[in-house]
Amino acid sequence: MARARTALLICAAMLSLAAPAAAQAPAATYVVLGAQGPVARAVIPAGTTGLAPACPAIVVDGNSQTMSLRAAPDGNFPILVCEFAVPRTATSASIAGQPLPLPPADKLTSVAVFGDTGCRLKADKNAALAARDTDEADEVDESGKFQDCNNTDEWPFAPMSATIAKAKPDLVVHVGDYLYRESACPSGDQGCQGSPHGDNWKTWAADFFTPAAPLLQAAPWIVVRGNHEICKRAGTGYARLLDPTPANGTPPACVDLIDQYTVTVGDRAFIVLDSSDAPDDCPNSGCDSKPYADQFKAINPAAGTWLVTHRPIWGFTNSKGKLGIRNMTLQAALATWNGAPPQGIDLVLSGHIHLWEALSFADGRSPQFVLGDGSTQLAHKISEDLEGQAIGGTTVAAAATEHRFGYTLFEPSKKGTHWDATFYDTDGKAKLTCKVEASQVTCNKS
Image (cartoon, rainbow, N blue to C red):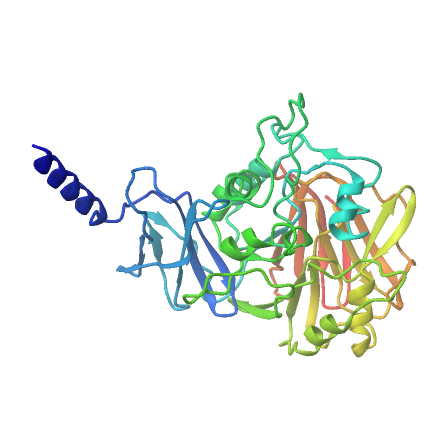
């Protein structure tokens, strides 16, 4: 009897080892865009059936192929991240029956842009400063900040994503800062009660993938890295989930500086420059701008290119009633080109400052949009007139600012002579429209 029982246990163990991989339903499917083109991703829970999970199949133009493993599960990320480089010529793709949004083959007709979307949970100023020298001073001045994550009026990323998805943009550009839940919710705070925190899958799901779900299904994304995704913060999650460079069999790891790369979508080129760790201020030892100067030197833009980088090259803040200027490191790096981007860059898109700003300059350099009002707690309102203000070796020729949550939709004019940028609130109501040309931006209230 004992021998029979032992034989049965051995057989059961062998059957368990030989069990096929489980077909888990994806927790998220999406498309990110890199230099190589569109990359389809699927996030697969690491087994609720007791069987080993596996990467799903992807159907491209009617042909089924198996996705490759990008990142295996671990303690903080109990998920498989799977990926597949979709050919630029593909016209359709789907995972588990869910159609994937592919970039247009010819002309871009609409680009939705926003950034700084996570729900802020930050213990206090001292913790922020210890984490990143003085970099967080503007974000966390005065005291700890705990946004009401459970209230869509206070943190409207989910309804805003649904609103943008209904507009069906050809492309979404997120200018960085996805994960803001860095500290535990204080006991008794109903606004964030039950929230996860830290660089792990639960937090990435709560702060980004769940609220962004309808928009991830509606359009492909350019995903810029923000200062919240540097290696000492949420860099591991960014490398696993969003960095568009295919792993090609090597587990993704966080690096301090991602080399600039160009994304081509339809008839438009976007240069993505990693400014995530470029200090806004460098008062004591001066700016270590060489790494960023080298990145700028590697740029060889075609005419009409847009430069996308998290920290604005030129931006304004209001800290305790005093007007501040951003970003000194990038401005020093640009000295190679007399303070302005190389010829061919028509527009700079950024976030980081939790406001909406549109700036054009007296010397005709590329206009700058600051679009960091994507749902993270807003910065102090800029009350001063920015026209005539000195910045980066020039002065502001025209400026518009908004102090509210929202997104911006860029669309080519009917005649194709310029782009129109319309700022919408989270409900999709137009608040401001700007005429965007290669050397100037002019805005009018809607």
